[in-house]
Amino acid sequence: MALFIKGVNYEYITEDLSNKSELLVSSNPVHKKVPVLIHNGNPICESLVIVQYVDEFFAGAGVPSILPADPYERAIARFWAAYVDDKFFPAMAGIVLVPTEQERVQKVKETFAAIEPLEEAFAVCSKGKAFFSGDSIGYVDLALRSLLIWIEVIRRMCGLEIISASKTPRLAAWAERFGETAAAKKVVPEADQALQYGKKLQAAASAAAASKSK
Amino acid sequence: MAGGNGELKLLGMWSSPFVTRAKLALHIKCLPYEYVEEDLGNKSELFLSSNPVYKTVPVLIDNGKPICESSVIVQYIDDAFPGVGPSLLPADPYERAVARFWAAYIEDKVVTSWAPVFRVKTDEERAEAVRQTVAAVEVLEGGLKECSGGKGAFFGGDSVGYVDVLLGGLVSWLKANEPLTGTKLIDAAKTPLLAAWMERFCELDMAKAVLQDVDAVVEYAMALRARLAASAGNN
Image (cartoon, rainbow over all chains, first blue to last red; front, side, top):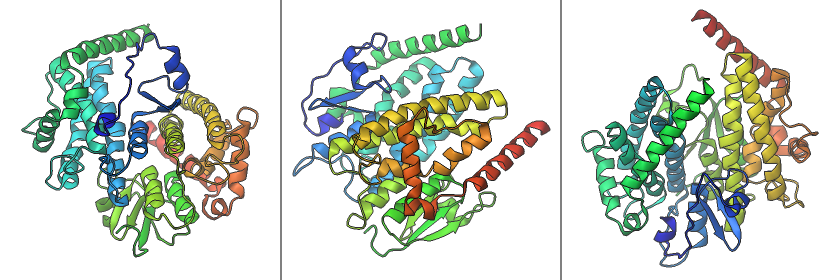
């Protein structure tokens, strides 16, 4: 999405995470995870590090910025992006990945608690405009948008509405607006495909827990 | 405009390694600030209103505007005071990405593995947390090799940079780990580059000015452990 916003062309390679390529393992030896951006032969890892790199490298007159110019606003954007990654995402992923019902109930509680500050943050950050960063898609928008597909998967798997017009009206409206942008239409995966993958992840997590407890 | 009037206030707690990071960054940039020691058992109104999401230290307040989360604060200090003192992040976008990668590694792998050492109740859980932390530190040795380019003394190259500040804030606690758990987290035999880095870092004026006394940290952590054990006994 960051590359799309910047109008940068790139070659996309789908990795089979159960059979990682030599290129992936040598480019990200520490984590062996995706995404990895390889630019001029240099690998850059960790999604938010990649987004900042793309923002800084492909900067210039007429090119949209992903992070704001003002240092204080940058700090606020970094704070909320870190919140999405460190507080919201682990709780939400836990709904699919934890093995027991008791743990799942806990993760659901944590997720619904974690979305509330984001609903408030949207009001403060957007200042009445369309996105967290104002008129155009920015850093926090990207950080949270990439998780919307999984919010949809959880809705289909568990019937839970983490973002809803009744409880989080600002985020629900933001999600709908974002879905209409060219960036989302070009880049976001299909919900059905994600649902199949989500079910696979859940099955794998249960199997791993079951074999651990033997 | 940020960084205009020089009214910087840091809300902290003496033992917190995350507060130490903010102090190191302010020291490197020679930025004067007012330090406020928070009583975390009786949080002030200013503190609660400045960090309602996490209610943790540090909080940097610049002309009344709060910034929370230590790595965000350190980056803010670098961004908001560009002409003042050295830059913490390099100018080149790729080198910045490498620095940010290792900064994220310290948070997600080193700190996350290590924090349970001070929260868990059994010796087995503590030993497992220490084991995972040691493994993460061994990978970080590779990070120092990569960032310093083999020629420099620090993650930032010839001088202290962003990653050095983030790891530097943890130094007193890194040293305290051995008296607390019997294991050296930075062991010259296993991670010689990091051991040399730590020695070098502690010789710097900023470290001497800011790092906590290791014995005081050990005493603090042992009191914390005793309180945890007592509350476990009461359940």
